[in-house]
Each structure stands twice: as C-alpha cells, then as structure tokens.
Length: 453
Image (cartoon, rainbow, N blue to C red):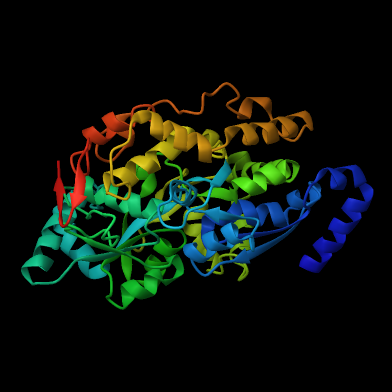
C-alpha cells in the first residue's frame, strides 16, 4: 500500500511542479504514540491528503513520549503527535529545553481513568446508583477516599499510573483526585517525583503498558487515552470510572508539535501539513461520525495503534463501556473537528500552564501576563488560519467552520462543565489558581517536603 502511495506521490509532483517547488521540504517524517488520537495523522496519510499537498510523509511509532520529543528536537522527526504539555514545558525549560510550537490541536477529550477490579469493588458502596441500579456518573474521587485510607491503614501506598509528567493524563488524574479531596502530590526543583505530601502516588507508565501493569498489581489505577481503558474492560481486569469528557467537557488533548525553527525555515511546508491535518479532522467528524468505523479499521493496523478493531470502536464510535456490559452513549468522547477542536487556543495553553504551577512544576508564581506570553509563543493560530483560509479558497472547507475573529481565547468554561464546579477563564490564570482548594496559590513554594507561603 505504501509503495503504491509513493508512486502516486511521484506522479502528483510531476503533474503539479509549481506546488512541489513552493514547498521548502517535501519529504517528512512524523512521530506518534499508539493511541486513538493519532488518527488525524493516519487519516491524512491513508486518504491521500498529504499527497494532495505534495508531501511525501512517513509515519513512525515511537517508544515513549520522551523519545518522541527528543526526535523532534534532534531533527530525526520533522514533527509529531504530542502531549499538549510537551511544547509548553520544553519552551519554558521544564525538562528538555527547546522552542516547540503547535499550529494545530489534534482533538478534544479521549481519555479515561480506570481502576482495578479490587479497587472498584471497594469504591462501589460509596457511589450512588441510578433507578436502573447502575453507578451514577460522573463518579467523584470522593468514592476513592475510603479506599486510599484503607490502604494507608494497612501500610500500603496507593499507586496510580499516568503517561508522562507534563501529560494531560497527569493533570486530569490530579484534577479528579483533588476535586474529591485527595492530594496527588507536589513537585519541586529538587524533587521531580511529584509525590511530595501525596495521598496517592502517581508514576509514569507508557500507554500500551497500562493494562498489563494494572493486571500485575503494580498500580491500582491509571489515566490514559484510548484504547487502553477499553482494553482493561475487554480483558476483565479493570473498570473505567470517569471519562475526561465528564471531568471537563470538551477539554483539549493532543497537539501537533514542530520546532519553531522548522516553522520559520519551512513556512509553506508547515501550512501544507496543517491543511492536510485539518482535512483529516474534518473527515473524522463529518456526517455525524459516519467515517468512524473506517477510521477504526485503519487504526487497528499494527503500524498505527495495533489494538483490536472491536476495542478501538468501543469509544471511537460514540459509546463508552464502563463495567462489562455497561455501555453508554458518549457521542463526543472523541472529537477531532467539531467545537473548533483543531484551533490552537491560547486559553488551552494557559490551562496546562496553570496545572504546572498548581503542582509545583513551575516553582514560583508568575503574573497573568506571563501565561499569555508563553501561550502566544507556543500556540500559533495565525498559521492555522492561514491554512484554513487556503482550504476555503480551494473549496475544500466551509468558511463558517473556523473562528476567524477569535482573539485566541475561548469563552470561560462554565462551572457546570467541570467536575469540581469551578469555572475556568484563561484570561485570569492566577484568580483561577486561587479558586482551586488543593494546589499552590499566590507566592507559595514547595520547600523540602512542605508547601510554604
């Protein structure tokens, strides 16, 4: 199949020499992690959208998020499916330092929090039931508090997995725990374990290894993207207790990341890539998700996600299975284009930065202006809108589908759309941090093993 596409690409370049000459670089390698939300890359490849732009793209699965980021920084990869926190963390120098930007947000929602069967049975008495006798969703982490206390009384730590220190999954898991009254722990410049003062011990596990790690008993739960929550259900080893759609309705997830240098040196190529990715996102959501089963078959191939199509379809096609047989409608579990999902909003970037500050990854307080400046140095809606304009002019997209007049900030997320009932306004990050009951506020710092200030 790929040899055929390369042949088609060659003929496309011969037919459209002007297009090929406009591109500063036409042979590109993009990295990804084996998760459902890498779908825009797979679709852009398989549907020929990259080829339409004169781009000869190779997609390469990466071992973990650090390897992926290092590949983009080192130039082995021209760009990648990234955790939204990665470009931000790299740009502010948390971990590996490099100026990474994103001109394209890959999706909304798509994650879940799963616990072991043992923990689920311990939680169930604390969860209200519906009239049908099913657990009432969304499930608060308050139901987990007695379980954590029981572990503590027995001298055992309560361990949970997340995929990377600056991942959405880390921040979502922390958000859920803190909303239920559990402290997920702090970071400090001297202690980057993230376990200072923690009630629940969080550690890194690569996404595809989550179910096996849970089954082995090393962790009692985890937060991960699909299909690895549904995999736990299919294997009968765990129960997803909440989706991130229930945690924060239409929250931002992955981004497409490139170095600032790549974008500066290859502006036409960058625009062409974004055009192809926008088309892929549109295809994934068009006609009420009519193409999702085709996308599922695509993603189930070993070179992409490599999980059984049945497992991927469980969440990708508008449903989500909690306990075995408890299948519920969640039409927006995976969103790729609706709700301006692909537009890189500054307010999304600011939320990630507030969570880094909340848990001590950003060690000292910053003014609101700093959050705005960092967001604008990493998120690049101007590149996105240039690509969108070209698609509209070519008759490949609708004018009404893009937020042309946005200042880059979404309207504040209302309190009813977030698990803890606390509204989020990206233009007031410090006021937002002050409103959260657990976490650093104002000039507080983590000194040694305690919060001071």
